[in-house]
Image 1 (cartoon, helix red, strand yellow):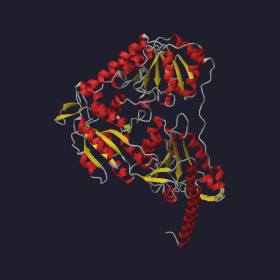
Image 2 (cartoon, helix red, strand yellow; image 1 turned 120 degrees about the horizontal axis):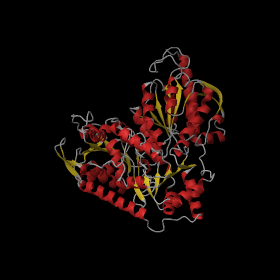
Image 3 (cartoon, one colour; image 1 turned 180 degrees about the horizontal axis):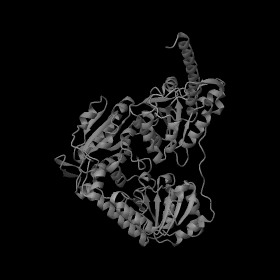
Image 4 (cartoon, helix red, strand yellow; image 1 turned 135 degrees about the horizontal axis):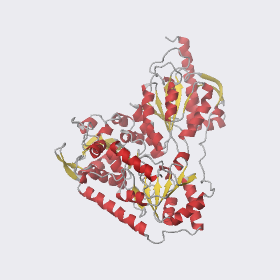
Length: 636
């Protein structure tokens, strides 16, 4: 037990921290406090407090935490700094949920956040969930407790093997990480973290491992000037080396140009539209690139890939020239490398050297998409290449296919309900329910967030975003539970927004604790819970491959309205089985000052009007051999 002297020292340290935090708050920030002379540049300061100061200088003011014995020192510093109004701490009930909320906050509002976990199981859950920001290029800090450095014996909850820095090895496989084994290496850890979290082209998670005995260590006369600031610089336009002229000639001679728009093309929408006109090309989009160019633009053939569209997949498979912009070629996005059946050449623009050289027969441009396209469009002008002045056979063919796609979808929207054998009544089809809710979201400036499975696949086939601010979908990790957890970000953001999360029943039950945390942190939004009592995306895949589904459904009835309504502060509603009842529930959700859950039973079965098909190939299950043979035969 601590004696009175130790308690006195702790009280003195608390007083010093409180005085420093108050001074920084009054001055308006760390730099301002240094400039006025109120804050000394050299301080006797603990590692944890210096870490919080360093992150504060980098603009990190939100902390999403599940505190434990591996993070009590950080928690104490954050308590004091929150009391001074410098940071905000959001305690949640699950590290996976916290990670999803942090990623959604950065993705939607641009605000940085740090996820704080204890040691052992907590960090493992946070690391697992970090696959989502890693796959989608979103910068998030992870502050993870770690085993002590003096090796007095196995620490409770650490990985129980006699090897050093096991969590460092684990996290370094996922992405960049740093174990703060030595206190004065803090500035290096912060710089490396900033380079990852604030990367201008491919941000991601950064794992800062904090040994429990290092967190409270005092650094004597630590120089605050060592705390790094400033994001790493971005790339400019790709270097020439004759590539621009080669690209011009490839565009000039091509008769059928398709432009693949990926998530890395987010700021290049106007340049892409300019290129489409000059090249007489049509665009196909990745799920994460919705709204980069308007859905209703005549040259946008919409999504293409394994779960693509009639128009998108037609353009993909018939183009003789592919221009790829900011895309990673995930298996479903290019049908496991079999999507471009007729492509004779590729022009690839990317900031990642592996992505930009992915295909053979490629003219590669390593650089910023917007700046590179600006130069390429200028080169096309100088060469007199402007092929889109009149409607070509290629443009007319693709336009017809888009009409077919819209007609195909319309038939499913009009057949909004079907008789379902599980529900024993007529219920909404998922395409119809998603279309109604997505249109409502556009009309009411709500941000749509899509979860995994059929909800996600139908979502990117259905949603007609006109700009990138209208919605997000985890097209990288397809992490079940993301959308419901992302609702929390609405209670954390400085600038409010209204989220509409589309979630299946299986995905919702991955992170149902959001019901409690949403009330705790005053999140305002809606979870549209589409319930078919199964993992329908996998059931359908099993049926398509083997003729029967297995172990992807259950016979357990859950009253989700009662479940959600049991949490005081959550509004729980039935969505009904007709358009008017669903719209009425959505309107009621929008007017409610908190979280609403709308339960909508949906159809699963063989009726083609109850689904949106897959239009491409995928290297999965019994399809693998045929898909791989085609890939190698193409040789692209």
